[in-house]
Amino acid sequence: MQRSYSIASGPEREGEIDVTVERVADGEVSPFLHDVAVVGDQIEVRGPIGGYFVWHAGLGGPLLLIAGGSGIVPLMAMLRHRAATTPRPATRLLYSSRTPDDIIYGDELRELGARGDGLEVIHTLTRSQPAGWTGYARRIDDQMLSEVRGPLGDAPLVFICGPTPLVEGAANGLVRIGVPAQRIRTERFGPSGK
Ligand SMILES: Cc1cc2nc3c(=O)[nH]c(=O)nc-3n(C[C@H](O)[C@H](O)[C@H](O)COP(=O)(O)OP(=O)(O)OC[C@H]3O[C@@H](n4cnc5c(N)ncnc54)[C@H](O)[C@@H]3O)c2cc1C
Image (cartoon, rainbow, N blue to C red):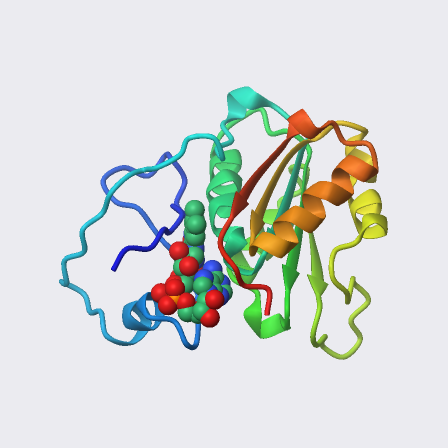
């Protein structure tokens, strides 16, 4: 079996990498990694494949990161790299999850967002929200994209990652609200969206 998993750790880490695998209930590989694989098992790794969906400090900003579900993983590598380097461009992360329990890296995102170094984390919870929730509670749409992009100006550097429908919807929406297409980079994780 072969599947693609993004590197979650920042490039400053040497000698090992993190991956973060979401359990797809009826999947073949992700339940195996959750339920069967144990420490010491050997897994063959190819790659890294790509090189396009990459941000390093030299690319500058401002940065607009948009994630759906496990699409947060490669964006997390960027945020970890951003936290470890200077200068740090103004950055906003829009992260769509179904429920609060589905938020990956919740504690680390809270901690990074609280540093006051120009990172703002904005969640949208599409299926259920905790009591008293005042944030977004719907799928990403043009109005949300416009509000989230607002403080970053007209042409932030954008990285969008997640299920294919979310990625295509967000990229098309950003073009509609005037973000230059050449500033938008996308990574599609697959057919989900269910
Ligand atoms: C470039 C790239 C990077 C990726 N990085 C990550 C990552 O960092 N973390 C991560 O968890 N996943 C990532 N994925 C998705 C991953 O490769 C697998 O698709 C996913 O783990 C499902 O594999 P599976 O064998 O469990 O399911 P499969 O047996 O392949 O599929 C079973 C069922 O799940 C559906 N399905 C397939 N893919 C997905 C999906 N991505 N999400 C939801 N449902 C799906 C299928 O339609 C089918 O109904 C990435 C994909 C790509 C292309």
